[in-house]
Length: 287
Length: 261
Image 1: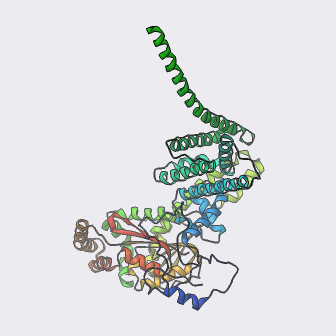
Image 2: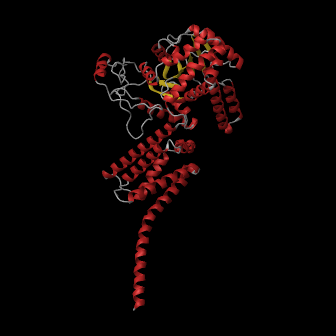
Image 3: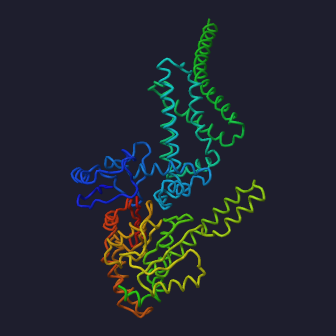
């Protein structure tokens, strides 16, 4: 097993203990000598420069770039975090859960030291995973509609279903989710968590068929964000069977939002009617 | 190097306190927090002579374990008496949760002082003392979860060999941690530091330990030691990944960390 060290080309090639070949795990014999020459002549993409605090794995992009065949450290980190999720109900969103996850992959528990000790990365990883799952779900639904196999849902129904689907992903972790929410609000996490939230809301509106390019774009995002956050909070305290109360709350909020749009129009037209009435009255009086 | 430490062993701790004005305790505490070991961790502390890191490790793991047990008890509110008594049985004997630390040092005297300290402070379980050379460790491959070397690596003649050995004995996923004096880049602090090192420390050495030469050597070895970036490159050369360092006190001391991935 050969791994290419990056910066100075003079570095001796070392065997990597854990990073495995992404292309295939079944193949036993790696091409030793030929790959050596290959790595020597093509120094591959530079690893992101490490600051004293260590790099944070990126959530919006793909994994880091490294030699073509081996997984990067980021991909390994993602694998560890995914494995750690199953220990969350027991240990919470903590470094302990990450350590247990690392153990299942055959790594030492010390590998959890790669992450922040408050479990932030685990939560962000989970949120990012949920958002991806939601996008895929919406994508599939859209395809069905395009193929004519399903009816296009009215907007309020669409929003309700999308938010419900996304909130349901929290159910296995619901007991520890309040803890996760509080960690996401820590100052050093806010940029990432806000980013994830806004891109998720964007996604939902995109699949809902939102084409607006005007001021409406902002109001729609703000409204849906409000609906999502409040529903999430309601869900934390909900003890009804299958969270019925939460879905009803969600339904009401979405309906409110829809009405708001209508009400705005109504107010405008009422205003206009009122003004005309007053004008008429004024004319009558003056005559 | 051996003789330096032979003469220094007994007064090692006192000298540490006086030279660094007690801050070395804080540095070692920070190292332990960075490690954040969970119960069940196997630690190898190299050049750990008088056991400072080892004792801190045991304390840390014990308190983590206690918290774990408390949390478990809270969850046991709904269990039957039978189940509760069974869980008490299994947890009772694991106050350290299977964590262990092996202290390895090249110098018998340092180990002796360490063992005495352990007895004196009441540390008994989870601790072992091994005589060994950092450049050629008497351990099998892939054994330890964490390898630490606190203020020891600058005394190793072939640092690259020590790093390679560290890589060898660590399990996949294992962590390398090195606490060491390093390079101060701030010019003002650098001058003050130099003044303190060359004027004050050997004098303290003479007064407290009766040994000017050893402490002169100490200060010079600090100056000769590679700075942060260079050490980081050496660690990467040995095969470690995700190598980074954290400066403490503006660079007087630095903690380097790497993973065997």
